[in-house]
Image 1 (cartoon, one colour):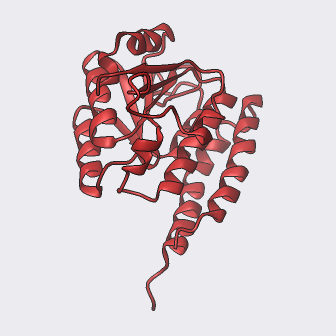
Image 2 (tube, one colour):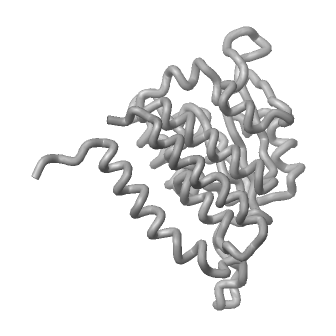
Length: 235
């Protein structure tokens, strides 16, 4: 039997993911787990999203995954967050200094009204305006996506974990300067206590009950995402 192409593998993985999340989507997972403990999953009500440094220079430096897929995944993540009204903070690095350009257009069009917090330091958590904007949401569960994995994702996630926040990283919407660098960054944040997830994983976590009127956002984003995914030349 010949080895599957990357597209075949992607399709198989997508089908498997859809099958895996279907039971959760069909249930009423917003309720307590039945153990008397709060539901451990991230929800629309208890989480927020932080998007860090999705700028042309950083996208061009990604070597750990297909850049077109990366940009589709971050666009899709921002879209579902916007439709669900998940509080979102957007930050860049080095724009005012003339070193880098602002957020890529494909992402910016999904969050056109967000303030873009520009900074000079590598660690967004050490930037007071960014940290203040995050704290102002009142949410203690933070979903992080950033470029690059080994620096601008890892540093604030480790800091947020230390400061008592629960964090989640969207592994297929982030990228590093090499596969080794990306994997090292992922391992670092996991060791700090962060939760790895995927774009579809967090979508399924935010949209867990199709009887909830807010699930219309999932019905809108998922078919659009599959259609856009099919257009990519992934081999």
